[in-house]
Length: 78
Image (cartoon, rainbow, N blue to C red; front, side):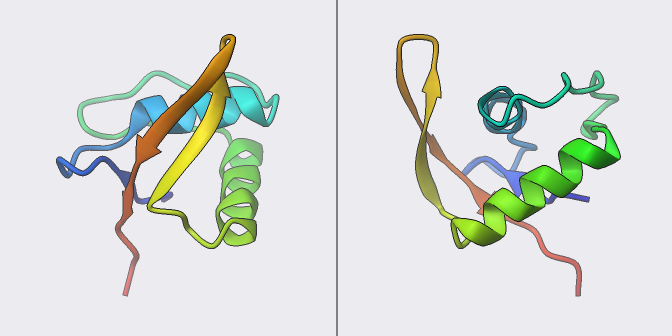
């Protein structure tokens, strides 16, 4: 589980799909309800990116010909 949410407490699928494209990973699997499913390789790469970037709450990623801003929050298992 990635636990990446928008500031409105919904799964942040646009951020994750943009990050997957930025990392040049395989495309995500379609979401089912409020749960999006990704390949193990994608989950591992995203987790590494989040650790390297210290779980940013605000970040910009290249999207098409300009950077796109994202605000995220994280739900972590206890």
